[in-house]
Image (cartoon, rainbow, N blue to C red; front, top):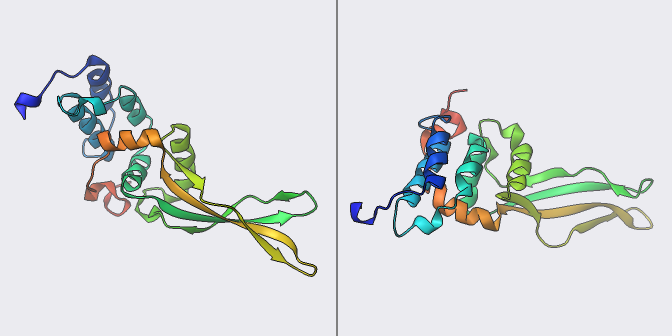
Length: 182
């Protein structure tokens, strides 16, 4: 409402308007910018508009923004397995055995690991181990042959405030892989 409006701080408004110039008008990244601007001019919610948020949005691909949309709703189970190599006393690279996250909604689902690494580098989301690793035993005598690792894909603490301020609550059809043009 007009009676709740305040002037947006230039440190927020400037980067938002600049960022809006370089995103798809009907895309999720534009929605992130507009939601941030809405917080910046709302007397009751201006404290949710952190100056760093506009810069974070400029670093996000649309798929990464979509990942944040889903993570705003809940965390997802992510399980991995690694084989133990006795000769090197090392575990082989982890392989994914279960991923609850809806990667099929992304334009480039094959980049999911890259996206998660990038979101982690921005302190927005990550894949964190959930509990202890489970050793896999085999052979006679019984020896460790590998490990199962339960993880959780979720928002980082700073990202919870970012998601509350910027990430929309509802999914628009044009943001998902099946309805977007390449």
